[in-house]
Image (cartoon, rainbow, N blue to C red):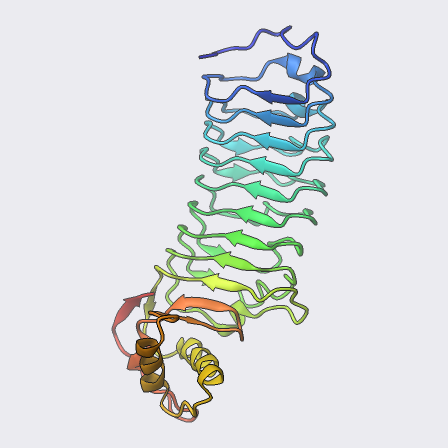
Length: 297
C-alpha cells in the first residue's frame, strides 16, 4: 500500500492517459503529476487525501474524469479545477466536505456528472454555478435543509437529494429544468409540499418523476392536491366518474397490482406513496380539515 509517490516517477511517462492509484494511503499528491498533460482519467479513490490545490491539476489539460471518492477532503477551494476545461465527470463521494468556496467549479462548461454524496454539505448555493452541461448531480446523504430556486443547471436530468434534512422546497425550483427526468427526495424532513414547489417547465422533454417516500407529513389536507392528481390519472385509465376520491382510489389499488400503495401521475410526474390522505374529504368548496396525525410516505 503506497503512502507516498516518488517525485520523479512520472518523468518518463508524459503521454500517460489513465492513472489509477486507488486503495492506497496517500496523504498528498506528488508534484510530478503536473507533468501529465495528456492524462484523461485520474483515479485517486480510497486514499487519505485531505487537501486539494489547483497546482495539482493545472497542467492536466486533457483530464476528463477525476475520481476522489472516499478520501478525507474537508474543503473545496476556489478554482481548483479552473484549468481543466475538458473535464466531464467529478466524483467526491464519501469525503468530509463541509465548505465549498465560491467558484470551486467555475467555468467547467463540459461537466456532466458531479458526485458530492455522503459528505457534510449544508448549502448548495455555491455548488452548481456556471455549469451549463451538468446533467447528473449527486447530493444525497448530506446535511441540506432547504432547496432554493436557481440552484440547478438548466441541463439537469437527474437530482439525487435523498437522505438529507430538507424541510423546504422553494416554489419554482424545478420550473426552468426542461430536461428533468428524475428527482430523488426520499427520507428528508418534508412535512408539507406546495404544488408550486414541484411546478415544472412548459417545455419538458421527458415526464419527470419525484420520489418522496420516507418523509413524515402532517395530514392536514394541504397536501390533498397529490391525491386529486392521482385520482385524475386513475379516472383517465378506467374512464370512471371518480366522484368519491377516497373510495375510488382505494378500490383501484385493490384491483390493480400496478398501483400497490403508489400512485403515478402524468400531470406533475409525481411517483409517491400515499398513506395519509384518505383522512381528508375531497371537495372543492369545503375548508380543509386539519388533524393532529402524522404519517410517513
